[in-house]
Image (cartoon, rainbow, N blue to C red; front, side, top):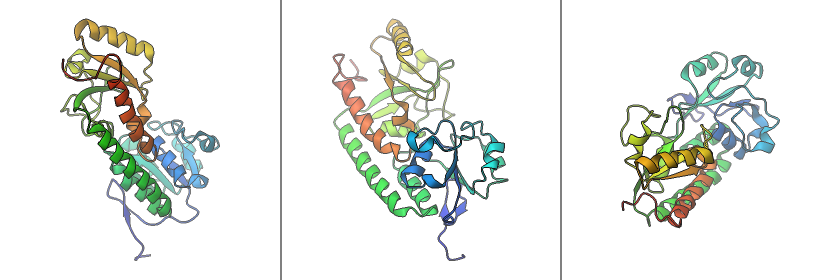
Amino acid sequence: MGSDPVYVDARGAPHRRAAADARIACLVPSITELVCDLGLAPQLVARTGFCIHPREVLDGIPKVGGTKDVDLARLRALAPTHVIVNIDENEKPIVDQIATFVPHVIVTHPNAPQDNLALARLIGAIFGREAAAEKICAALTAALGAALQAAAVWPRENVLYLVWKDPWMTVAPDTYISRTLAAVGWDTVPAATSTRYPQVDILEAARDARVVLLSSEPYMFREPHAAALQAELDACLPGRRVLLIDGEMASWYGSRAVLGLAYLPAFRAACYNSPLGPVGRKA
């Protein structure tokens, strides 16, 4: 056993190759999809209610609450040998409790599109799916390269990406969302903040960006929200545009990032092709 490879997670904890009969619980929606895409769905014994892709596979997998309100008794009863968590999505006190009855807790923390490569390889190595992980990594590398190439034709622009309402909340520059948007030439505001998901004054924050993106998650922004905010900004800060964006495409890591990195350049290109003209460009 001493010569077995050791794989280190985002917390710095070492992990060895799991047994073939490992029982996996994943409390991170995007990584649950990655687990399935690695061919590990038969070993998945628990997920959150927000783990929805691939739906046809996950319908039969027990739910253990949400990402931040895990039903610990239910999780314990399902007897996982490994639980996959994330620093941003799962609360540390809950993760600490899980560690008292689950032998292996794998902590993840991707902060940029390229971090998906290490994420796929970590999960693939621990559970013996290296070949499948490399196929996903090849697709991720190609998608990121294409996104960067597409973005090179546009000027860099500031964008306000909103994830919550009442209060308004956005993302810090060091988050996965911000760095994914940066890959297609959109720089999030504010440029500096002491918290990863800061509350903002909507008029003050929008002053530094000509485009405001309303994400479909975690707050489910819809057309009425966009129309109301557009009217408010038109009255106070004319020239700003409010757009709805598929939050999964900007915030989900793992294998869905391949789709996200294709979606975002097309989304931004559509903004340029709008009758209203390019977004974010100063008049």
